[in-house]
Length: 288
Image (tube, rainbow, N blue to C red):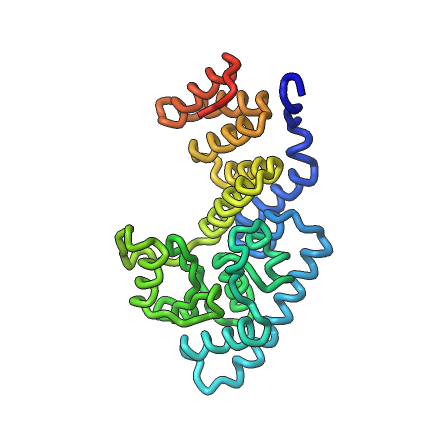
């Protein structure tokens, strides 16, 4: 086709429904409410959101009943309780066949399929545990997200592996295996992640999967959510503008680059934005 394929319009990439989802996301993120924030990221319907909440609450009620029957409520016993319910009874496991598929980052699909990435499966453990009175924290170990059951002295578990318990040394061995022993270990890698950090990591995973699947609308949506979650981050604002440039929404990209230059002067991101804006205005076909 002469002149190449038509460029997408912003209205095709960002709809009123997207704006509503973003508003719900920011409200939930501000209060640390993981389940509604994850639902907003996915863009699930109200009916699906209500269904997901009801399902999680039903599972938590089962866990709470079983908890009353435990002879001990130490971390190991609580870990085994959640493992028995979520992994053994309900079948939650990692999707090691199609690991990087977008659906493995989407909470409604993870709850429906009972398959997903480590971080989404950990979120299921956290949400069920919280409602059942079982403390579960997300552990943002690089390369492989984990959970910890039972508080600061609790048990590390790998929901991707069906809730396998891990010692600190076991976590280190897993990290070394995942990184090819090319990165330095530190116990600080096992610190709990705050809800906003978990949501940011989910969005980062989605940024990679939508890019791999060449999903222009999905990539722009994720970049917009990240920029809104971290409004004072020049990196995130630049990422949004770069995403718009790559998928061909040049007016939006130019506005984004100008915003980074004005909002974050004398930063590497502003310099990058200035070069990218020059490329756009000069008619260059690529933005670096």
